[in-house]
Length: 475
Image (tube, rainbow, N blue to C red; front, side, top):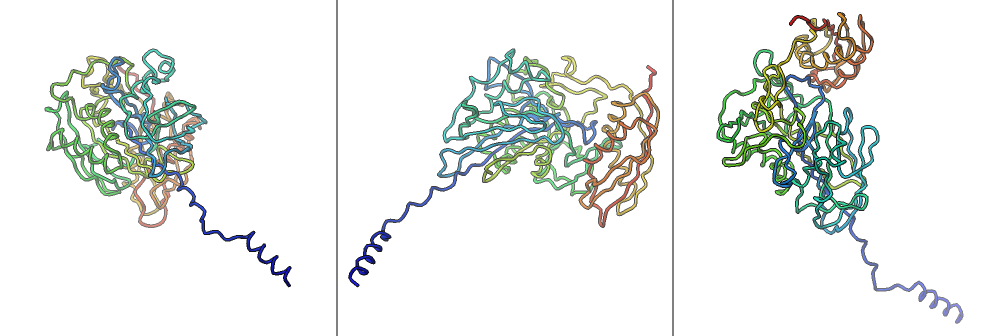
């Protein structure tokens, strides 16, 4: 008995219950991502046209990096990604990926891994600001000379550094932010036409208002009107009254940047990029010089008449996919869409409104191929007139399929497709064609991204005939 009692005491001592508790595990590392950028679109382009996605417009001055206004391009404008560490997190690592479902990357910095339509960075973020000004390429450097379109936005990145973002290390080098520029295609939330006056129709609800802009070289000659977007599926005329000043437009853009989660420093960086391009130069500011770092894509050049709005999150995620591993606590995106309303047939104003005399405006448009559509055959809860009106908005995309594959042959293509419950095209196929099959294949591919009003019930079956004629060779 005594031996058993001693063994029990020893066992209790070995399993000894201590009053000291294990320290709690550290809280998980947290971070959030903020992104701003710009998408440029033109009313003459089809809704599925390639668009410039970028961050800045205008002018590049290599001798004044950090003070000028750079050039941005969505065929789009340059998205900038900032990282903010959560409370209690001093350092964390993650993978960031950008995916362009239908398009290409034009340039990006820092160097990442590009696989097809996806771009990946391995990032280590630490608390505290840092700068990469000395690492950005300059005019004539290999980093700029390799840009496919000859317009190097990476040289302007010093203008968009902020002092409130985390320092990002990629491949052992410090950066203030991540940058990419891309050409992307896909349907935008708003459709514009100019067949019988400027009209607009929404596919989805916007999260804020829209801005109609009439501008010239300076703010004294710039007028704006801030207005509510049409409800989804409804058409309305684009306002033609000039009610407010440039300052009202600037204040509203800043308000929306804050509403979309940008910090004060990030909003300032966005306005350094876009304020003059959208609303004209400040009184007494130096005149904008011709570009010193290449001609910007047309989508990034200043427009004399435009409509602007911020892209809804769902549309931003569809056009420009962002993903992270491990996931951040939140991703805040402020992507401005600007639609140039001046027909290219009469030319457009170039950067800084210097105009066509500097060669930045588009040349007069010559008569190209002719495309006609019959009234579509429709089975379902959409009228043939509504379907035809939407189809006509994509005529530039249709013309591209014809002119890229068989531009000198007259013929017809019949397309059958299904509009699903959310207004998206769920199925599409060539029903009949007298042209090369590549024309029909191109049409089907582009049609799958088109958006129609949501049917009240069920799905809608459509058959549409396109009639193509070669360009008119008369002078």
